[in-house]
Length: 151
Image (cartoon, helix red, strand yellow):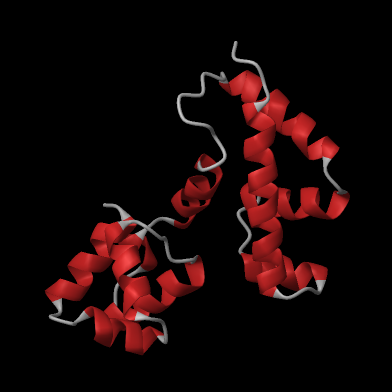
């Protein structure tokens, strides 16, 4: 089940409006709508809150590892034909070319599956800073991969 369908099914199954769910989560109704249509994806913390509201395990909405893989999937250009070996080489080259903090944060998130909160605590930084660093690093990676010639 995808995240959008899981949230929609939970909400409709309990006869809760988007407005009511948004209010319980302290977000806008528009954001709930975007989650349910797949335009946006809630972060792990929000998934935990949604699961708590509906009294279901987070895995009903999405597996945590799957969520992390979805983040990385956005870095791969559409119709990329890189083999796993080539992608590993490209990723290693990319990580050696960025600064140490960005590289460490990236590895903690995508290799060790640490949450932004866990990474923030390790680096004594705010969680929003970690999220924005990860977002910028994924954009750099996407650009880097686009410049790699196809096999």
